[in-house]
Image 1: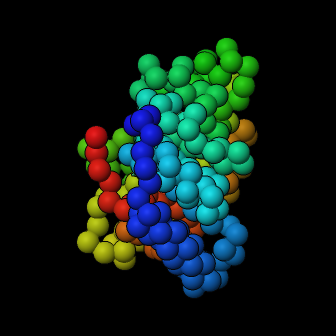
Image 2: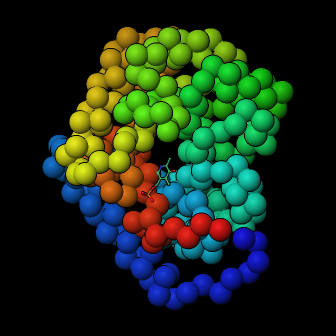
Length: 243
Ligand SMILES: *Cc1c(COP(=O)(O)O)cnc(C)c1O
């Protein structure tokens, strides 16, 4: 992925059109939900996307990018124009990769166990920094997905909140694949409720500021249900090719 590639002009143009269209659709969804469009951030999900196209999106105004894999991100980051761009890790993180990613991203959205949080805390302390995290919730209770169940959420949050050098900023979820946006909406609604419940409790050292949910196929529905980061990949960059 590091070899120089000649950007495809048509693809650059379609990224431009897509980026603009997605922003408009977010604005419309926010307006329809009586929400302020400034309260919803668009994350450009850049997994499998070559650096030249990511940089193009950054040039268009993308100021938040999400990567899934530690190795892929570390391989690409030196080619990216990251000035003023926030970087989040959104993919499942193995404990043995924590050392490599802490300090390289602004947030880890996919924390789903005490063990992982402990390792992030430990490595962050060694590096002398605090790592912002979201806790990933498996809202559809799917065996194939990571994330914790909503019933375990409060206990896990409280346990993590007592660790040093790690700061909880909110929640992230990937709902089950749904037939329609309306069906996804039921999961988003449940997530929003869990998020609001925790927020209302004002637990010490737990910020419930960020609710990260909604992807290419359902971000409008997520905005309707309180999402403030929508993570959009293929609708910006086109269908993914896996290497
Ligand atoms: C790939 C991915 C996305 C974006 O998916 P699209 O359907 O391409 O928009 C969002 N969140 C996570 C965690 C992902 O892995």
